[in-house]
Length: 148
Image (cartoon, rainbow, N blue to C red):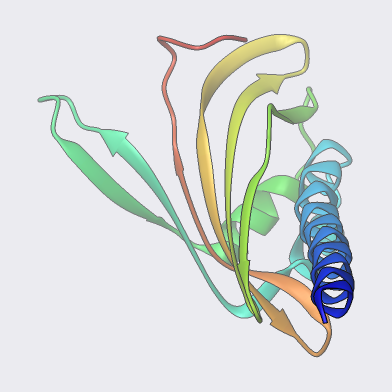
């Protein structure tokens, strides 16, 4: 009996590792697409109903949440620009419950070789038709307190 429980736990552990790899791969595809200015690759990892937000601070120091239009984001990714958009992820904290995953990723963002800002991304992902898709993405952005 205990051997069967141990074997089941090992199988679940292996399945979770595979799911984590698939989630990470979807997120990395987004950032690779940003570096390549490939809006189609970036678009492919988002759910059709995806929501994007960013947390900012206004002139008075008040925290505000701004809505980011996915189409505008994709247009900006695909637009010709003088430098590569390079978002470097420092680590992945992935939590999975069936078809739902929550991913926390601290990052540093560079335009070409020049540091721009840092922060943390929070992804809510959903497994749709066997593929992990970004359903909700919110991030923080700051220029102070970064370990670039």
